[in-house]
Length: 405
Image 1 (cartoon, rainbow, N blue to C red):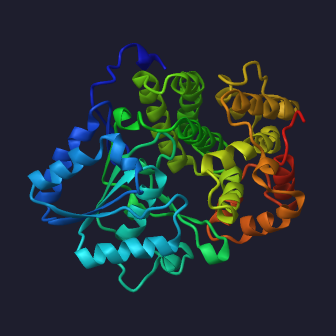
Image 2: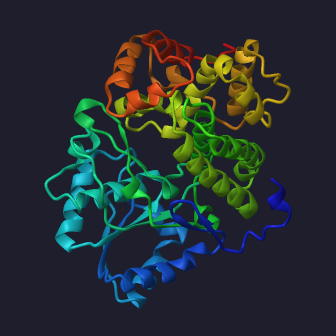
């Protein structure tokens, strides 16, 4: 983390992943450049997607609409994005975009508004398809209208990756899609826009970033880039999350957490995900009000326990900031798992599945959903240990209560 000693957080950096990310305090002003480029391409109408309220106090709204108006681009605002969005809500947003004639989409918010923007961007190019047909893999999209992602959280990484998530409510499915055509063309990561993020969201979005890299660094298809990024992400979150929780206005801590989340998104875009995300999606599909990051936090210790023997060297390396002294011996699995849980509890992620109403009787349904929800078997297939039914059930069981209980 040597960059902390010499990087000015008020200098807007251009970070080129597959998306062009404007990163740094004040980056929202780059909307002027983005709007000018949209206009240059002949785009006259865009739809802005948000939740009901998060965008209002963040400071993102006025610069965005000012940039559009300055460049003569008409816009319509869809503020019906819900947490854990459903395919029905995607269809509603798509209809609004089609009725307006939107030629590009701007998602302002965390994972939900940006993921809905990605989904609508595809469906605008495929007028005979629906949210359900998209998320149940009934067609394979190859094109989408341009997407701008204005990120208000430091966790999902969706502003720089090709992934989107939505629930198919009547089936209790929460699949993910991953297509080249839904990389946002431009993204804005401005830590000043994240200062209104409530403490709970500071915590759980950061936990999401940690989970992204623990998984990305340990899949069977990982690569050195994903692992290298994982080391930096965990070090950044371990150092800066307690600071941000103690002082939510600390801009340097927010900058570092936003950078960690960006790196984590790029890491799992390269290394993919496995057990923790595959097992969390059924949790928040069954209980839509469950925060994704909390679901991951409840599962992570048991997943570390399960995979540590197969990836001891990698995990001992990347977990070192929060679990110092690991020797990369497979025999340390439970020690590592308990230490990760202790760290999670220390920052406030101290709930387990039983606290959220799940019981031993819930596990059979969760296991079935893990194995049958579209896309989740793909995640299971790259687990570093065989994702057999018995292992999945054991991870859920071990996550009902604390390891030290």
